Length: 460
Image 1 (cartoon, rainbow, N blue to C red):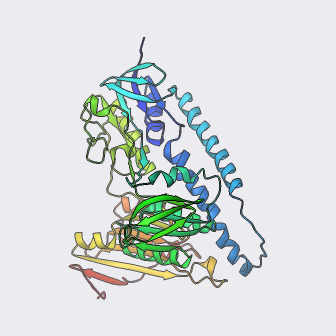
Image 2 (image 1 turned 60 degrees about the horizontal axis):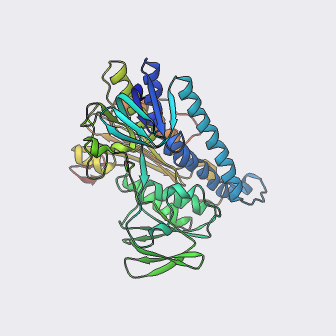
Image 3 (image 1 turned 45 degrees about the vertical axis):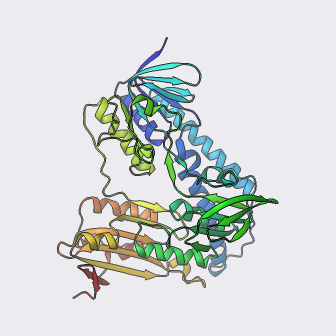
């Protein structure tokens, strides 16, 4: 006999867990099915372990400047200790997720799920679940190009479980995952090369962020090969021999593909059920996360909207409000803050300078660059940058871009006034906190330059 639920959630990541918990608390009978580990990509093999690795990779540079503050440091790094402590923390978080679900009255299943109809789900254990509503929250999966020897490379999934830290690594990609892992590996002492088919990393980010990070990565010894693709991989002793599209070959201890992610829909049975997918395999949904099959919804990375954990959580909450609390709720996608946890760090929200100039006749750009205070006693000459972009006519702040220590923390708070349509005058009214880097955002006196009809000019 089938179990009957008001909602069956497939996928125990951030979006699915939020939807399951809230729906259950609103009185629905809810089940959630996860084939791997509860917590999803972010907690298990994404944001959380990555940030732990980021912290680990930054100690080397802190030790370098420690002497200028009077400290004498002798340090060594042990990869296995980092892995063991990371695994301990991830296990703790996984238990919390399961405890929260259980406490909310959600029924948990550890199994593979297949959608067999508009209201039915079959589990790999042989059980069948009947549901008035089904929510797909299976996230994304790393993409590997279809080339010879692709299985010799790792992705972000495997990077968290390497038995040994490689001496040399080639990272393919130009997005945030590629640059984050490139700086992580380099910070841990790995000789790192980044290969990218484009001509500049972080496509879609503000140009000052792209250029600033590229320069900083090069200063740290990371090599770039632009306009290249990997065409073939083959085993070469203990390493991997890489054949490039230009005909060159080189051998590395490890090769990592950071060439994007794809919706995780393989074997779910969605197309057979009548759920429409787009060309990338993402579930096509309306503003309320409903698919072409009225009883089936989808949230998170599997929809191909904005592949960020906080967005998935917001979508899961909006789904629960819409379906089980009778409050139709949508998610705004026009002002999403984000951070890139490279070294140095990036925080960004709103329009890039290029996008602002294309949408507004005249914009004012405020930019400052300076050595962060932590570097001023040392020989480290690296600078950080803070940038505000405003509409000349109204003074409304259109975008904010930060490059340097604490950028991710700062941009979260900047997102609040931007969401309230704050103007430069609103920023000016705030009293500065001194000495901080963030005070620069409220002490800009005059634009660095103005862009009118797409042409840069001095402000008048």
